[in-house]
Image (cartoon, rainbow, N blue to C red):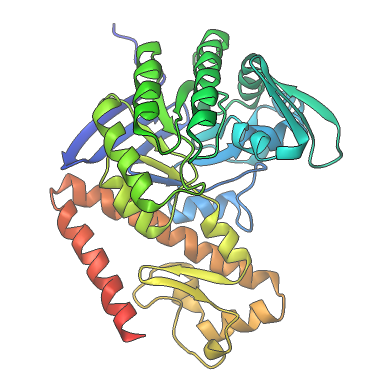
Length: 375
């Protein structure tokens, strides 16, 4: 009898560079392309797990750094792991916390063995090494975990070269430290906007061998053209039969254009952060619902949208809630923003499976151009 693997990825169809696949984990299957709502501190802000299920979310992301500091990974382990702790029984991916640590700037010191940092909460001193980060993620119990890496400023070649050597050494140590067979481990490709460094990173990590590959260090200050060039290169270098996860990127236009360049998985705080600030995503742009022009607008956020918010509430009502500082307004706008991102990901998948991805892509941009011309 052949034992079914705990983790697997099937590439089901391609259309140009665009890919449709099926990611299989202990906690369920994830059709790709996929957008992962961000649940940094074991909660996707302003929505419940039941909301996420109703929206059709198949996987969410949580953060190693934040959960290590509060409430603590060992406490979460004692309480049954992250799935039980937050009441979410579908797949979870945890990022390594590397981006958060390295963004602390004045609060951390990096060396070849790891990074020492002070908590943004209380200033207490902590130490992350590759082994420590794997141990934390094993305590959390996510389905997919990631290597400790160094996210360098994208336009500084010398710094990226130095950080790349460190990231590669840490990746090898992370792989050696991993012990749980029910978790997949993704390596993280770094190298800024520099194609020679990106190629070096992709070749090193694929030779080392991981269950999937995250692409880090993008959407942190480079241009869209530079990001796209990196993705086009990596599409030719990363294994076709394993998933590619673009870290921290996720607007409607990013999903379309990065799927066009071979990306399978996305996460971004933008949809929830915008929702909490009274701004809505649409297929044709963004709406600041605090704007007075919406005070008497009876239309939904977006005509044709099937989310709960658009089915029941007007822009005028949502503006009233936001201006009045009512929590419901932030919840409803967040629901819409997540619905849009998850729906676009599903539409992209269906278009790829049907061999009409380029038609979908062209229609997306035509709709956006037409709407902008009307304004």
